[in-house]
Length: 80
Image (cartoon, rainbow, N blue to C red; front, side, top):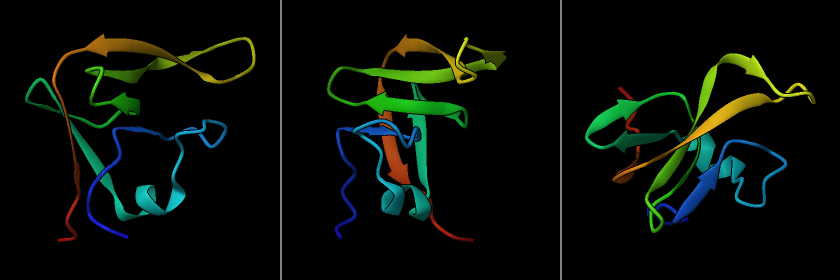
């Protein structure tokens, strides 16, 4: 597998954009220049991220998310 990251990636196993192998390597997200640790899904070409909204849950028990628009920069985290 190459080190290029996909245009869109999700941490939700029910999503068609979920990739367990890639997430196991560790994917970091810079959004508008700030490091984000609560990103649920991102799309580079459309310029948005979905972040979890605190501890709020929907009626199915899934975390509530908020869609934020801006510059998205995914990267592989290096082991220290």
